[in-house]
Length: 300
View (cartoon, one colour):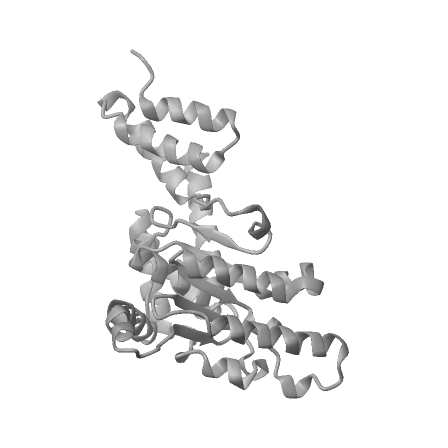
């Protein structure tokens, strides 16, 4: 039996060190093999390949150190994601505005489909952005301002412009994380120097915002909304505080996650996790450790 087209492409991709294409071809190979003999193997490795978070979209060379763009259509686990009623209303607003953006443009009504999520760390702001991208069938484009400033202080404005130019011509959900690292209040930067440079970067950021059209989806995230320049805040059509989950919400999150992975634990093991972990990031980390402990014990 000769090589299939997917197998040929897989070999070619590995030889050329194109791991993004290789991964897609490997997944396609597991799907095309319908023999019962390989069913377990194909299903196991298809799930691993789809969940390993490596579906990165190839970017031009000058953008690789600035942006991360990911196709999450297969890697995002919708069945284990918990969406509170508070964030559900934000999601519904984003979807509604996306659906009517063309009509608004025809009517000459500008509206940037942008939401600023603020709140303490670990409450799931970035994961919410990934959820929006998954549900809308769009790539997830991620820009973390803290790393951008650390690596490119001298040319930050130019790199911001590059990132926005990419987004304008490539429909996606554009996630601006840790935006407070770059958009300081200009009234706080009268001393010049580094603060003055950040003020100029803030102006560049607002100018790039003004170029965006109704069909772009932008989600900003910050732990310190009090530091962000007021003029940039006005450019976000919606501002929403993401709060830590309540006790019953954390309970729903845990049992939804466990149900999706096919595991069950007694309440005496689950409830202490829920009680002592303040936010969902800490809770999920400890839950995964609990699951790992079970897997290890069963393998012994």
